[in-house]
Image (cartoon, rainbow, N blue to C red; front, side, top):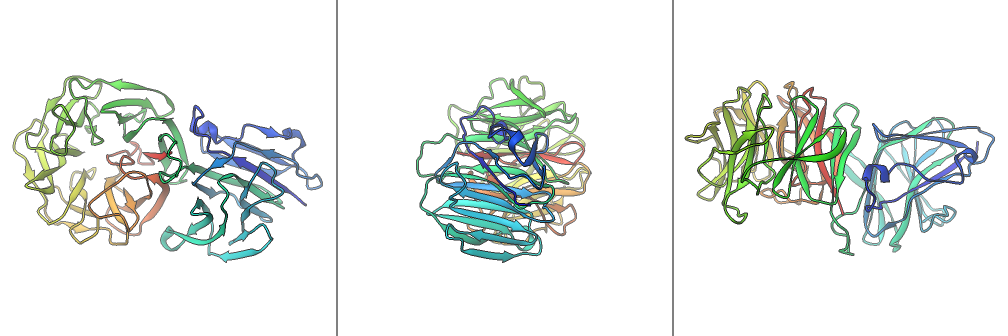
Length: 474
């Protein structure tokens, strides 16, 4: 069978819904003329392909507008055909007859083919993910390396700015699929004209499927998952909003006079109360974040902390105690305080930044991140601050650990090594990773563009099967 199939996908971020902008919706020529059947599963974000007839030529092209400037394209490979090649094609036009480059996977080999037909072949034990970056006058290909960490394997030089990127399926004999396609315009785009797009996503920790619940050309952050599993809560422009896990229009949660909220907020164990961190005073400063509690349906907030700044991060399972980060005498440490207010208790005293405290579901431990060893890593201590134990020790800067409700896992955010240990900036290439609650091998859940605002606070689904997070593009 001779089958060649090229799909061009755009990053037209002016579309109403990013999820819809990535769905195959325009067929040239008509689908009836195609020798490749295709379908798009909106729930899982999966593109499924299979040949109609081995004797018919392939004439279909499913296209969007071209990509302009720097971009990152990520995709997971679902089903790989028993025969044939699948991957990306990059072309200067919607005519796929003169590609800039092909990036094709066949079995456990990936090939980079330049316009002159020169082929570079790279072998891996297993290939299920591709990242393609257009930057610095070149197209760079990344694969998973050791411990699922991305490594660059090759590049094609190209000075073309306006290009088209698409799926390429060549000589396939049976089914093939792609999922979790993400097209990202990084902040280093030189045009400086692109607006920020925030995407609220849900990720299944078993299948790794990612679903975009909501996206907007506004900066929003830090989702919490409601205790009944039906809604997500996030902050935007100093206020809180809730939205169905199935999408829709966000609804404001009224927080009284607290209208300068940051991204440190979350629900009580019974879901009846919210903890928020609000910047008291006329302006936001590094010194005036204060922890409050209020009914989760909205209402008048009650001040809990009197020492500032304080940033909420965790609520004990018995509902009696809040854990938070406070800066006292120039030092950031972990503190606890009764939910009604009162005297705070300092739990950490090590030099360097301690942050992100969150309780285990049995209340025995508090997980947090600390740079006391020179890099930012995930730590665990008893709820009273004793027995502080390091859980991660690698080249990454690891932040914001969140134990799952079933007590099996801890999810956290990982920055690349070059990021400073005492900062958690936005708009970088980061990972969501997961480790067993008692420590052990680390699993990569997602590669994304984000950081600050992605997963600052608890965001597990009640059944411990999914997490919510925010990713970004420009």
